[in-house]
Image (cartoon, rainbow, N blue to C red; front, side):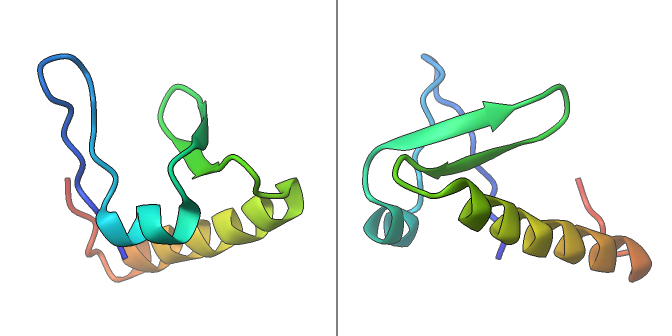
Amino acid sequence: MEYTLKANQVGQMVMPAHVRKAWGDTYKMLPNSKGGAIYPIDAEPEEIIDSLKVVIQDLQNQIKRKKWHR
């Protein structure tokens, strides 16, 4: 599932309600120059890595199907 988030005038973004319900209200963010990860503060590193592998696979599938959009 993919979401488009947009920052307001002061740079805040709203996390979708069902994500907040599943993840709670406190997150960590690990960004780099072109991407990153946002995850619940209590997530274990191994769980984050496993989840990111699924996200990477989805991105690779989108590229193969040429359904990538900006």
